[in-house]
Image 1 (tube, rainbow, N blue to C red):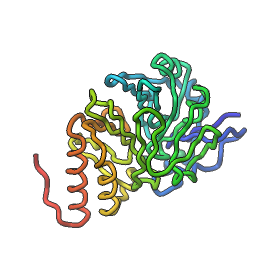
Image 2 (image 1 turned 90 degrees about the vertical axis):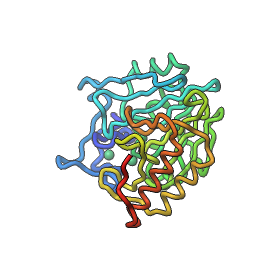
Image 3 (image 1 turned 30 degrees about the horizontal axis):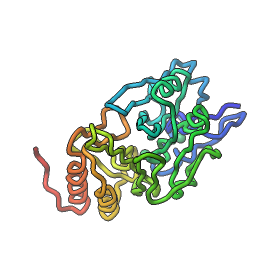
Length: 276
Ligand SMILES: [Zn+2]
Ligand SMILES: [Zn+2]
């Protein structure tokens, strides 16, 4: 029985003979069902269509893992490599033997954690490929676990899966929306891996904060303030959003503060146009 993957969000369901009628993630107001209706794929079908894993080493101790062509929302995962083991941050809706081999070459997987449910992908498959590595999910997002598995461990607030990696629940986009602080990133200046919790936008001097990105639903000022305050206790220079080119290379903390200020000025109706 295939464990069906939603073609719109890339999130996998438990194995069933026939595909499920609906995807709860895509039915939610933060996502959407495309005009042609709900569509599913098995991993075998994706493989037959020519899908493959793309691996890019991004900096010392960090490797991006994406799918080509992109699946669902098109995010890439990040493999954070530490002396005490590797964490897969965010996930994608695909896995194959080449992808598993690439992770194994870099020391395997000790755990998996995602920024939010849109990026759960086929995390259970990745976990099973690496000895049922723990999947760390915030308790608040338990209802969004589409494929339950004994490897899933729930946490809340802050959580260190191992080494000096720290997960921080920020809320906002989802109640459990989280970031990962990696002190060893950016040559020791620190990196914050944010997914859609703090999304790096096309103008890479800025980030944004939304309840829904595809449906343009904003967040209230107080929520944006609390997200920024939550990450304020971490030292970091670089910010990795959810896609290959969504990276703030330097001064990430200042960029996030500047972005929150601009966002709040606009939603409170006291903005002036920004020029550099
Ligand atoms: Zn979906
Ligand atoms: Zn999202």
